Length: 182
Image (tube, rainbow, N blue to C red; front, side, top):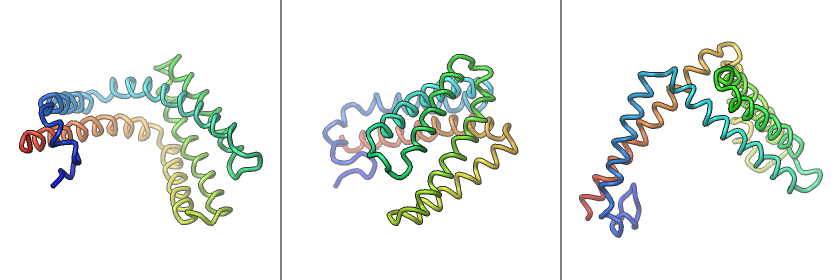
């Protein structure tokens, strides 16, 4: 029977469990450090978020470029892509000021995504419920970030730390599972 975590490939590659364990331990250590140093974590996250925004913006514009003229949401993809590119470059050039831009960027990101999802939900039958629910949730998140930008910054730092902790714990679990099946 295959492992629920790693699939059939776990047995074949079980000799590398030590590297995965080391990766998991490193992830746990980074997560703990990030959790106790949220200021540095948010600066680190801002830089990586800037890179992510640039990539996301380019991809959104590329998708819009390739979409059929008149496709639902094509214009929103262009707007969303341009906003993501601009925000990404701001964060990369000015990481300190980028933290504030990150909070505002998140607000705009969730607001525009929420409006887009609501529009798609109201105009398209396919996945209507999911689009409407996601649109409403995105707008609620945008409003929380609008009225409490500090909450947005703190939330980002905590989520980065928790992401490292959870990924580290999952890697440790996978490595121990691989060791047992090897």
